[in-house]
Amino acid sequence: MRTSVALPALIAAGAIAGQPPESSLATRDLASEIWDEIKNAATCAGCQVILAALKGVADLGTTLLVDTLTEVCKISGAEDDDVCEGIISREGPVLQYILTQLSLGSETSDVLCTSAFGLCSYPPVRNYTLTFPSPKPDNLSRPSSSGKSPIQVVHFSDTHVDLSYETGSNWNCTKPICCRSYESSDAPGNTTTPCGPYGNTKCDAPLSLEQSMFDSIKAMEPAPAFSIYTGDVVAHDIWLVDEDEVLTNLNATYSLMTEVGKVFAAIGNHDSAPVNDLPTTQVPSDYNSNWTYQALAQNFTTLTGDSSVLSVADQYGSYSSVFTGSYGTDLKVISYNSIFYYVDNFYAFLDPMPYDPDGQLAWLIDELQASETAGQRVWLIAHVPTGTSDHFHDYSHYFDQIVQRYDATIAALFFGHTHTDQFQLSYSDYTNQNAETASEVGYIMPSLTPTSGPPAYRVYDIDPVTFGVLDFTVYIANISDPTYQNSPTWAKYYSAKETYGSLLSPPVTDPAAELTPAFWHNVTAIFETDDDAFQGYYARQTRGYDVSNCTDATCKNQTICGIRAADAQYNCVVPKIGFNFAKRDGTDQAHVKPQKEKCDDAGLVSLLGKMIANGKN
Ligand SMILES: *[C@@H]1O[C@H](CO)[C@@H](O)[C@H](O)[C@H]1NC(C)=O
Ligand SMILES: *[C@@H]1O[C@H](CO)[C@@H](O)[C@H](O)[C@H]1NC(C)=O
Ligand SMILES: *[C@@H]1O[C@H](CO)[C@@H](O)[C@H](O)[C@H]1NC(C)=O
Ligand SMILES: *[C@@H]1O[C@H](CO)[C@@H](O)[C@H](O)[C@H]1NC(C)=O
Ligand SMILES: *[C@@H]1O[C@H](CO)[C@@H](O)[C@H](O)[C@H]1NC(C)=O
Ligand SMILES: *[C@@H]1O[C@H](CO)[C@@H](O)[C@H](O)[C@H]1NC(C)=O
Ligand SMILES: *[C@@H]1O[C@H](CO)[C@@H](O)[C@H](O)[C@H]1NC(C)=O
Ligand SMILES: *[C@@H]1O[C@H](CO)[C@@H](O)[C@H](O)[C@H]1NC(C)=O
Ligand SMILES: *[C@@H]1O[C@H](CO)[C@@H](O)[C@H](O)[C@H]1NC(C)=O
Ligand SMILES: *[C@@H]1O[C@H](CO)[C@@H](O)[C@H](O)[C@H]1NC(C)=O
Ligand SMILES: *[C@@H]1O[C@H](CO)[C@@H](O)[C@H](O)[C@H]1NC(C)=O
Image 1 (cartoon, protein in one colour):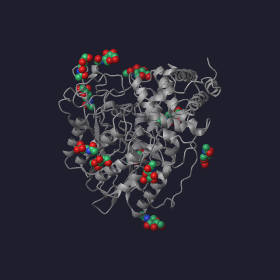
Image 2 (cartoon, helix red, strand yellow):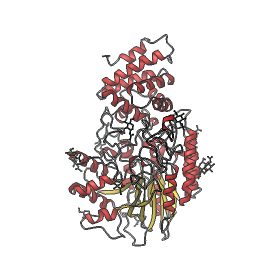
Image 3 (cartoon, protein in one colour):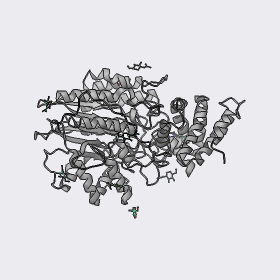
Image 4 (cartoon, protein in one colour):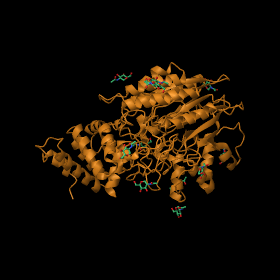
């Protein structure tokens, strides 16, 4: 067994000197050294050893880091060789930049060890006090329902359309997504496990499925006032995706989306290349995301029909736009870039991490203050929910301060990303959670892509004066139904008020009653005492598909705790090796266990976690 300093010492002593760094011998030596470090690391200190080794290689250049890490990936068996090569060649340069500026033992390195490797526990949130232009007014509170006839708003998310989806190709492949002819044996006619024309749970959505959903929305009576889309246009072929593919995907989905009318959309972690990695302007790199921000700016402008969106989206994908109500009150929809706060964004691991990347939090405060002053209501829409295990704790807590300050102005928040049907709650006091301290609801949308259950969209009933949520109904196309591949049928799955309202005391069944934070807190209290109600919620996360067992107290406790944690530090997720990726085979569904999990096969951060986990098996 090597000592923990073996690799840096090996490099420093020039043990591999005389060999050009790219030589396969040097690469193989380094790779097997690092693989040994990985197999030996079991603690937070062990993680620092791995980082030291990787940093030692990174300091010698990108090519050596990419080659070495690719070799480690192949040894570990974490993914097929071509997937290892594709992911690491794309994200390797970003990792190289991050490692060269990283101080070992720093808070950033601890956060990396937590998020990527699951080897450290979360460091405490760094205190940072945001400044608000005015103190919270004590005469403002969430307005009561108007009783006016509601408007309908549609929500869809995580479309992940795969333009290379091939009907008849093999769905039973070893890659993160199937239904493509990777090998001639996968081609239509050559496989005994062919994909149907409208999708498969092992594959991202074909365009035909997205068209089918939009057709169903277009047929709605009455027509929706507008729609919201919480991001992730691009497919999960993350080892292949490049700028061209992202732009082709954005154009295909956003062109089709114009059919459903006005849409407020948000940027997802898949809507750039390499996947997840959106740098702030602080990163002195040749790589920048302006090309995707510019495309999104155009697309968001088309979809909102609001020309003011163009200039703002040009900054970092965020904008606000006002929907004019029919009763003298307006709604401002603020779409922000949550990828700055996403742990799989390697560019976020700056040392030290900025408190407010590119000033987006300050921008949010300005936008919310202006709305408070103008008497507007606000919806916040974004891709990554603030309470998930893959949202940085620090940014979640800072964001939560903003939510608490403007809780009378914010009607609700809307997210995607987890692919599952969930919600999250904010509290004015997380250590004293009850109906009175519950302050905001975040609605988390299941996906169109069928990788974690039937494709879905939601229709919200919205108070046309307060823009509060009165109810929502989920529609699904049941991909497990034998007739589905003839032509998907979109049918009502359940309504929130019908399902939960009658369980409360007093019951909440009045169509005009808002689903307030107190309502949803009380629903979680029912989950604690009524196991049928809890199991119903748990199964609906995946629309009844492949439901995992959540009968023991720990799973229930974690699920409920996760809901009550819009401030992520309270979500009860304990990092452990492999916690940051889904096991694709077996019963353990990372999307739903614990309550909020990250997207499967999300990129290099997840891949590193998988390599570590395989080193432990
Ligand atoms: C942050 O502030 C709180 C209360 O002001 C304090 O209890 C806590 O120790 C501080 N945390 C750190 C990491 O400084
Ligand atoms: C709340 O108080 C402020 C300052 O006293 C006042 O300007 C504002 O009009 C009041 N707002 C409401 C809704 O009463
Ligand atoms: C899928 O492929 C695996 C081997 O890769 C095989 O064991 C399994 O039987 C296949 N499933 C079906 C339904 O053909
Ligand atoms: C099917 O497999 C055969 C034999 O390997 C190959 O020649 C053929 O090109 C494959 N078909 C397609 C469509 O790739
Ligand atoms: C964008 O998509 C539309 C509709 O599918 C298509 O007609 C057009 O050629 C595409 N443009 C680009 C630049 O790909
Ligand atoms: C989306 O942006 C792309 C790239 O700028 C552009 O070619 C396309 O026309 C836009 N589509 C819509 C619907 O705005
Ligand atoms: C990207 O766009 C921002 C805002 O428009 C600009 O300040 C920056 O210089 C651009 N970066 C590059 C490398 O073009
Ligand atoms: C979907 O269809 C399958 C197979 O017919 C059935 O078992 C399941 O209950 C259906 N799911 C829903 C939500 O209706
Ligand atoms: C929530 O429960 C409390 C009692 O625990 C009750 O006073 C309140 O009316 C309930 N609110 C809603 C909206 O269900
Ligand atoms: C679920 O797990 C519990 C223990 O964690 C076990 O007792 C129970 O039998 C399992 N139920 C099913 C249906 O697998
Ligand atoms: C979960 O368990 C913790 C520790 O035992 C406890 O403090 C907390 O109240 C539990 N939460 C729920 C929702 O059951």
